Every structure is written in structure tokens, then in C-alpha cells.
Length: 107
Image 1 (cartoon, one colour):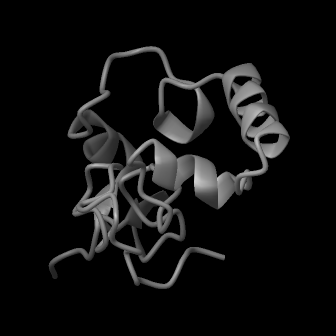
Image 2 (cartoon, rainbow, N blue to C red):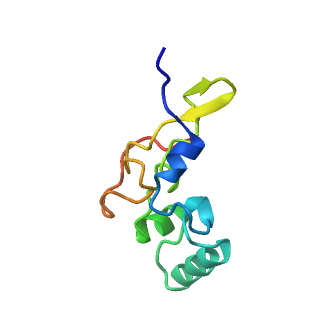
């Protein structure tokens, strides 16, 4: 029987940021950097939500820049299995920064 999906470790090793220090959801941004950006945007009168941050930095909003859907789709023994994000094809980056990546976001 073939399994559906990959382990978290298999998916994370394929990300472009593999081996780099992690910040917000696999990006290299710290929480403080995100807060500072959001405050600057708010002060300037521009949209400053989290989705705006992801889009401004070419990060995939659908998977929150993880590169995979965080909801397990199957198991292998006691290990949960995940699928790559359809919107970014597992990169964690927006395929087209101006694209809305119209794939349902994880709940």
C-alpha cells in the first residue's frame, strides 16, 4: 500500500531555507521584525495585516510559508504525513508575488 504525503522532516529538508535559523513559520523574520514592519505600514496608512506582510515579502499566504499543508493527510505507523502546498509547490514563497495563490488556506 502506498502512503499519501510525506513526513514533516522530508518536506522541511526540501525548503530553500532548510538549515537556516527559523523565525516566523519557517521564514527568516523574527516576531519583532514582523511587528516593526506592521507598525511602520500602519503609521504610513498602508494595509498592515499578517496577510499583507506575507504578500509584501513574497511569502505564500496559503501555507503561511511552511511549504506544506499543516493538516496531516495520512499516517505511516505513528508518524503524521503532510502534503506540499499546492499554491507555492512546496517552496514557502509566493509563486507570483502579485498572485493571490487562490488555494484554500489551512484552518
